[in-house]
Length: 104
Image 1 (tube, rainbow, N blue to C red):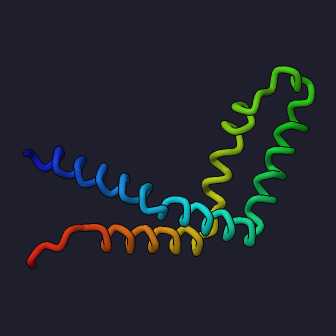
Image 2: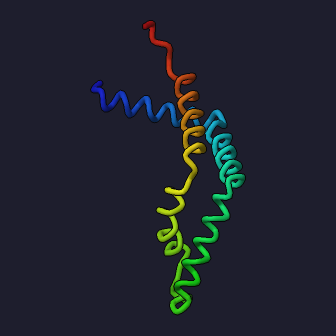
Image 3: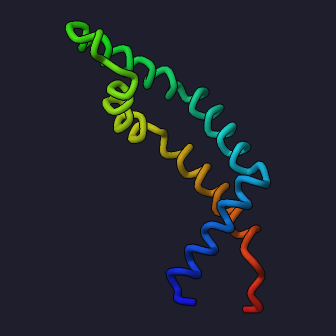
């Protein structure tokens, strides 16, 4: 088995464990709560409303996908760094707990 196939297999197994263990849902809940507490959701909602208001002349043609496409870059870039770091650290911990012991 080559390194790419092995890496893909490990990644798929970790993702399966992440989902089956309930860790994915737990992390989503943590992220959702932290984003809400930081005011991030309100800022994204405001941005969505701004996109709608800026497109009132074409409101009948504006779709949810159009709004999402417009707002997503802002939403991703505006996640507070401390929240990103905390979630990434929790994911790292899960990965380390889930990897098989190597005798090194």
